[in-house]
Image (cartoon, rainbow, N blue to C red):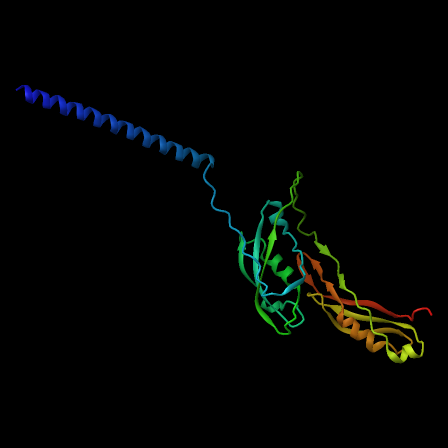
Length: 252
C-alpha cells in the first residue's frame, strides 16, 4: 500500500514538471510570434542581399571614350540608384554597332535601360584586331550624389538638351604641290553628324583658292568625331554643320 502511494506521488511530481515545461515553451513561442509580428509591422526586417553588378567584359579592348549616361529624371527624383548591363558588337574602327545593342540585366527594372542604350551608342574602343568583335558587355552605374535639396519634377514640356561636342580634331595634310608653290588657303565644309557622332554627307561650301585643298578638306571632315546632340536623353542627328580647315605655311 505504501509503495503504491509513493508511485502516485512520483507520477504527480513528473506531471507537475511536464506541465511546467509545457507552459514555459508556450510562453517562449508566443513571445517569438509577437516579436516577428512587431518587426513586420515596423519594417525592422533583415534586408535582402544587395545585388552587385557584374564586371565589364570587353574582350581585351581598350576603352577610348566612355559616354557618361544621363540620369533619368524620374529615377533621380525618386532617389533610385541602379545599374544596367548592355551587350553589343564593336566594328573594326572601335565604334559600337547600334543595331547590336541589347540589355542583359537592369536593376531595378523600368528606369535606366534607354539611358544606358543611348550611352552605349556613343562609346569608342581601340580595336587593334581589325575585325568585328561580338558580345562586348559594359555596365552603366547610376549613383546619386548626396544633397540636401529636394529635386522638383520639371514641367513635362521642358526639354533636356546638350549640344554637339567635338571630341576628335583633325589637322589636314598639306598637299605637296601647294606646299612647293607656297600656297595657303582654307576650306569651309558642310556636313551632317548622325546620332553616333559620325560625319556624313560632307560637301564644300567655300574654298580659297578654289579647288586646291578641297580633297584634303573632305577627307579630314569624315575623320572628325563628335559627342552627339542629346534631346530628352536621346541622341539625335544634326544637319548642316559647318567646319573650317586652314592651311598655313610656317614662317621662314
